[in-house]
Image 1 (spheres, rainbow, N blue to C red):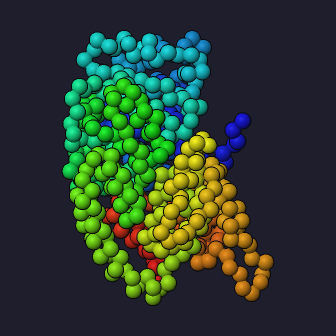
Image 2: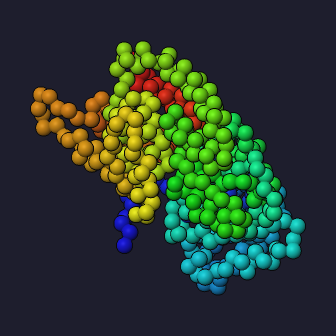
Image 3: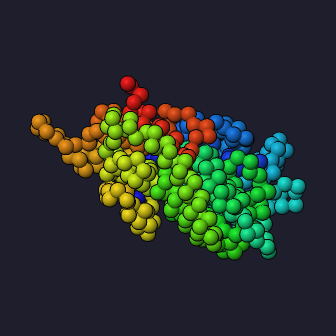
Length: 446
């Protein structure tokens, strides 16, 4: 039996479906769910994700059946059919995607009975079961992608040898998804490839519909979007590569080499791209060296977040910035096999550091792990504790940081104390932004 999660860092699978669809161009979500589900999800996604706003036909404008007692007793399929028809009539979109809440799945409503009534229409309607009990945000993201790849992406007989698809950077759950996608896309462009990202700037539904022409699917995660990649390969025959989310020189250099190898790019060309990026990157770190040393800006660090961000942040802090990330707390629900895969990303540091890795979905336990790792003072004159310390995590970790008297930077969901537009931390350029943000916290009170 699953344990109770006291302070979760995600919404349910329905929320993940809403969040994924709300940033897909010209796509209109249609909720078949109980009254209140849409509003609660909208508030959680907006106010805890850097105040991203509602988007097109989302937020408080979500189309919903607002299922109540009548539908619970007599069934809600007729109500859903009515809602789809009215949404098509009133809301301009190119794709209408029906998603479900827990209640309508529990009473046995079959959304396909309603969807098939619109098969001969001028617009496309598809759907998926996304009740909250299926899992958290990541599960909703995965369900939506798998449905799109099966029911919306068109088969292609020919491949474009210079086109790749990119996903695994989870919209909204990764608060910096917009900037991160743009930064990773730019790296792949420098390797000579066009990139479909589905959720980035300038994307259209046509790029998603024609994505089966790609030569490779790149999943920037070892845990999120992998099942969807397997479906894409099964249905459309396009192979996939999973590669860890990259931040900084060490992570990004590894990313480029793995992608280059998978695409069969000549090694000297890849190394030339890396050499140019490193020259730009380290020119800024050289400028920083004096103040870094004079002000003694090195810190013991606790990193808290999902499996994508924690591995990327830890490697950057240890091997690029020279900090000491000795404790990492990963808040995902992961299988034993996934945990083993994630652990492999916390080895082989050039700095030689070996972080303690903890998997715990309860954010309230972070303080306990810090006390266990560094020990607690008993009033002795000299005590080697978590000092000077720094916590990199979500807004939930602010309480622990204040209690311990250490600085903290919010970089993961939930994020209610920062406003995010196009900022991103991926790659070489993103790592420079992250360095600015981390060190600005330390010098901000001077």
